[in-house]
Length: 301
Picture 1 (cartoon, rainbow, N blue to C red):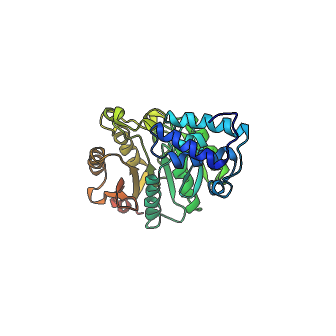
Picture 2: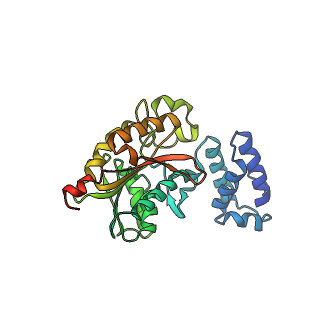
Picture 3: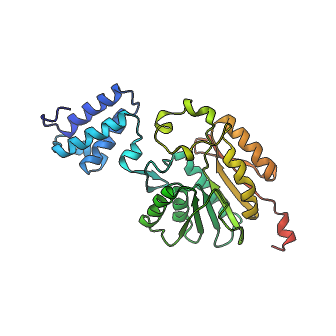
């Protein structure tokens, strides 16, 4: 785009789409629209209602920079600084993973379990909370819940706290620094442990989408040679903190990693309680399990 030539929104979209497509960006049209709407300060729909509006020099300069970054593979969510998740606008930076649609199915799984056995004020801990997307989504659907989001990264927790405040959950969701559940007291026990832990095997690093591998935080992606190191550590911690009949809900990765994860979960929880969490299309995205109810008899619960 020649900085000396006035360009309308319509012309800009055409040129930007062609340029991104030429750089190998598969979602070139959508990305051009999202970035143009951002720099113009309007809704994406308004791009098509005002195709003849010229861009100001400042808008064009800003858009050129965003397009260059997108062409290098930087995810659109980082360029915009936000991502929608479960109907909420979640702020994101390169300090946190970008929330993905499949993770919404973990929220659904938790809601199902809270609605079938937990008390009137369910206690839920979100492990590796990152941006706080899961914790905030649950807070939006279960106002009476006590929710704790934990993460080892203080930079991630800053983003989570900001999302909690901005979305109005500042007094309903607590945040704490913890390596998995190490800093989370086991008493009183928890009704649900939910987690989207790192689950990419180190051996899969080079085959990972460059937009993920090169821009999202590696400590939130990779989990040892088989992709289950974090889950292996989390399972005994979760068992120590869940009430009898409490639930674990975790996201899993590829078919091979999912098989490894299921074997680990089935070895820790009653095997018959382990079920797949599926997205709306039926694709498996995680696992859910319940602790034994036997202790309820022992403790008279």
